[in-house]
Image (cartoon, rainbow, N blue to C red; front, side, top):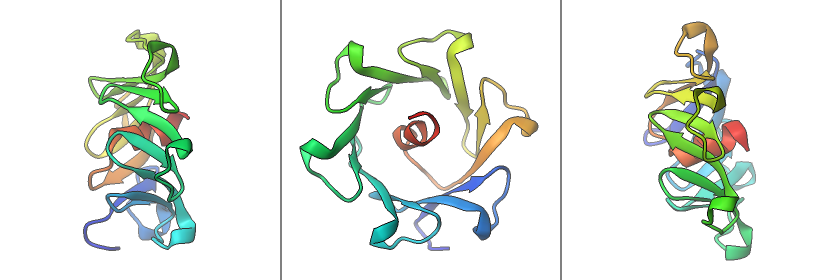
Length: 138
């Protein structure tokens, strides 16, 4: 494992063999390799791009710190997910019935649970919420 990289592990594991994704601060990679052919997407803090591209035509999603939008638009009609109080909601909702995932500093839980049996992934390091939402929901 490389110092400075952040990792997403399957379930409650922190074994290197269970790394699903690696974040190096610019790109998200499939697995633990950080070779160019493993790049899933790039993120500049506001926009998620397809692969290594930074071309505006390759913007997949836009993030404003609370909402994740489809494509380049930040109009309400393009809101896909809402981030509030460590929870991911469908669309613009804040209804508890629309909670898809709960995320704390170490774990991603299914729904509004924080029960160990509902842990889907384990986090190591800091991974932007926008990327987590994309990975989990989009």
